[in-house]
Length: 130
Image 1 (spheres, rainbow, N blue to C red):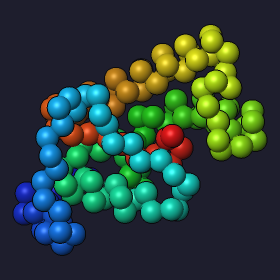
Image 2 (cartoon, helix red, strand yellow):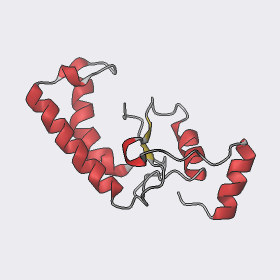
Image 3 (cartoon, rainbow, N blue to C red):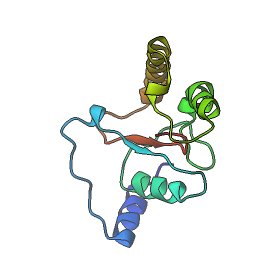
Image 4 (cartoon, helix red, strand yellow):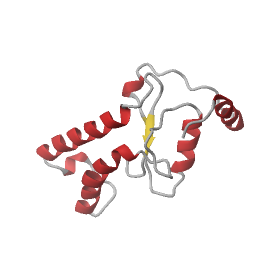
């Protein structure tokens, strides 16, 4: 979602929020929106995008960052299925699997950040993010 400057100002005024404070290191502090699908993540994504956060270029209709989909399909779905619960942790995996997860995540993140207009604040939305 990309808003024109007047639309961004209008959205900020409508919700009573001024510009976000600059991050000391925006590369290290993403805003990650994750929750149960249908819980309002789309509304939060829209507000943050209107405030100027880079929320991704390849998004689906719900605003989910599609660069992370292969990673989430491969690893998060596996963790959820393995424990048959949503409160999974990396500790549920072997040391080798944790390395594989980090490597796969870093690949997805690298793809996602290719269009990131650094040093703009950034983040992504995907209900399976944790």
